[in-house]
Length: 180
Image 1 (cartoon, rainbow, N blue to C red):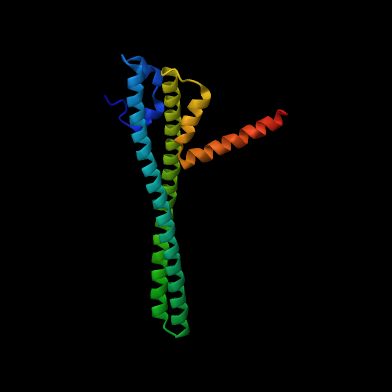
Image 2: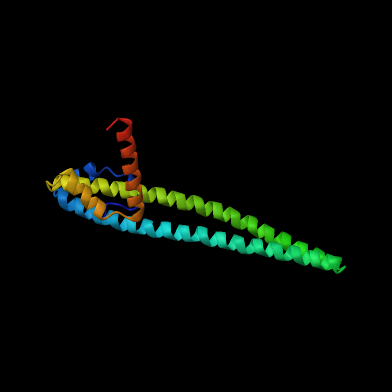
């Protein structure tokens, strides 16, 4: 039985309610975890695609900016040659390219927002997955914090590992602040 129809369902779900409505909570939680893993895999692909779009747009903007320089140089050369009409045409082309750049920059800003949104959603999904794994450890009677934490750490993505390091750094700072 599918538990989630959208990724936001994973983020907003109440695991206790979901597994409380089933006859076999451990089996239901295993199915829920499998769906979460699929959702996270899709979210990671989306983040990768969004990041690639941002980079592609940056590259296109850079190429177009080079074209602006070329058209400007053409206009200078034509003026120096005394061909005002050709200079005018070159400046018109330069303006067209600048309009293209403005459109690409707008697209880049939108792509950046999309990437940030997707990354935030991915982190929320990963957090919910970790909650589900802890709940699974509780249900299986292996709720000892150390094994559960090591099991979670073993499956962490590079992003999660970076976040873990950030948490470890924050923990060290707290210990130092408290004199420990």
